[in-house]
Amino acid sequence: MIQVSKNVYVETGMTACNVGFVTTKAGVVMIDTPMRPTDAIKWRDEAAGKGKIEYIINTEEHADHWQTSYFFPGVLITSQETRDKLSKAARERVMDSVKRIDPDALPLMEKYQVRLADATFTDKMNLYVGEHTFQLFSLPGHSSGGIGVYIPQERVVFATDIVFHKKKSWLQEADPAAWLASLKKIGGLDVDVIVPGHGDLCKKEYLEEEAGIIRQWEELVRSAIKQGLSVEEAAAKIVSPDPHPKQQGTPMTEAELHKAMISRLYTLYS
Ligand SMILES: [Zn+2]
Image (cartoon, rainbow, N blue to C red; front, top):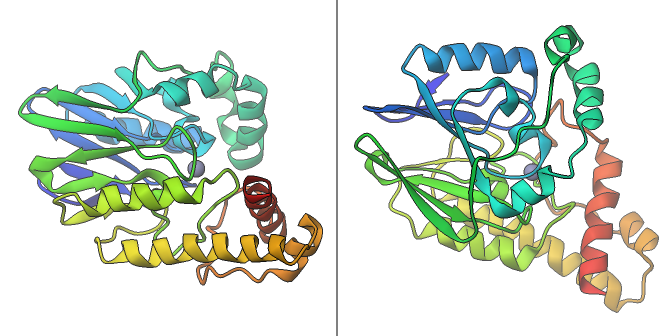
């Protein structure tokens, strides 16, 4: 666990997304929850050691960000989009994932249910806890339900999967134009530290590199379509412009992810 600022703590070493919490005078606010139930129990106990857990915020609809929210107390907040998507998420998919990545946790899963948000918003909302303000705002692009969490008093923003710091960026459901606009939003904040969805903590300087990767994917797929290539030909011909490795422990092989990303962008631009 890394202490990022006076009251912000982050863990970047779990499978798969980063998780964090903020201590306030009125309790603890969690941001995202681990993917593995055994990690979730440890993380919950670590946070509870700093105060009562009052709120949990899940920053997007992909399972690595919310799969274990069931194990946490507190009021759960997500975007409306994420809640809508999770209302269709199957318990069986989570069970399959736990069997694969955390089989020892199966006894904990007997009564498991996908946990839906208690409170949602569409564009932005402020949450006031103790003396802290949490500014929650829509950050689409990687996924449609993504949100950022900006804590001005701490000069920290949780950027969800709009930032993959030196890890391969996942565009399998991406809208690159929205992604680039979200990066600009993050760039406009007064922060010292960005907590990326994946990878080590970073600073605003990294945003330009992330934007460059997104722009190059867009250009490569647009040009393949212009050349009249089929989606299969495009996937075979395009070399990934992303210099960073795929994070270990994440689903799909490199080849599967490559195809999924190109077919997403191909459909978007055709
Ligand atoms: Zn994601």
